[in-house]
Length: 436
Image (cartoon, rainbow, N blue to C red; front, side, top):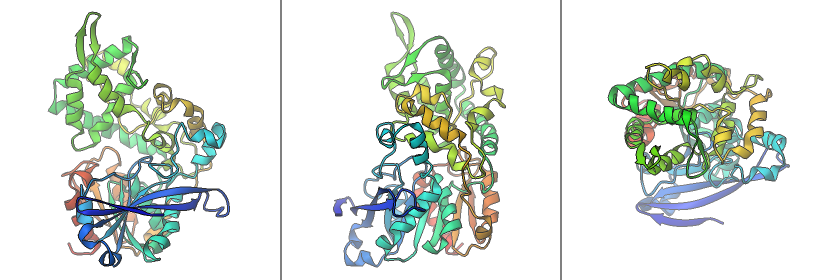
């Protein structure tokens, strides 16, 4: 049963689908997918039925599709000519969510880890192909992939290009061959540049960040939701620096970090509350569980790649930094074993995460030969010095996909499709249609 309802300027319809957990075993266990159909109010009804479809694949992994109100961000531009499907990828949002509460239904950690091997881009693409006939009547659709959604789009082009009329990618061209170690060796210098840029903008934050880290090295701090805040966890707030407003948000967080109390200076309740919201994986645990697995495709384990590679960059060691005079370096978009000790949303899943990190059975996600013969119109926004996705890796992949056209820009950060949505989508559509 479908349910339709209205928001300003749009008509929304809830759609639910049943798909195999393992598409290689179509008669086996099934899971449910949820998607929200969106059409402009003035195009609802019979006129809307004639519109082509645009499928949106969210970034992550582990995040459900945006919960827009009305025509926010890029959606208003898309609705001028498309009927839009906002898909909660499997395990996220309302699509059979995978988290500390639901995963024990699978059994112990080994069963949970086996289950989660079906939550990568290859399964997501097969989900899309499984539901496309019911949505479009079998016609191909345009896909818009943001970040990890772009990774999924490249998998789509590799495995089922017949399902696509066009592909639009924002901040999400993956390396076709890099192991997770290669990804993080490229990432840490990029993160360091973002931190340097932040301190250049807000030099007063150098001392503020050192003070917070020093406090955490000498005090046990627990956030309101039970998250154990360590110096390393504080450093991971650098994930903010990859977004357009992230540097400013980090500055305001540091600005009022401490208050005076009868016991001496303490981290303020306001700081703790905001840090809890930024650090907790309660709303997106798959991000922590399968983040490194999205790079696994060469039968090698990822083996906590970000943690191992971090040791090659000792400047990120908080204790060593505070023993000297240098600025504390933040980290960002890296997953570490200690997160499964600090975060109550992840603690029950620590052994499951260990098994995924040790897994060697990862199969290829991309087909370079098929991409080299691509015939689907493809356009990609590549953000200059993107903190989350390496620009050099993205451009190498762009060259490997026949006919792909790029827009390389420093006007936006990784979240450009949100910050500059209509203009970004306009530019990509024009590129895909060979209008510029």
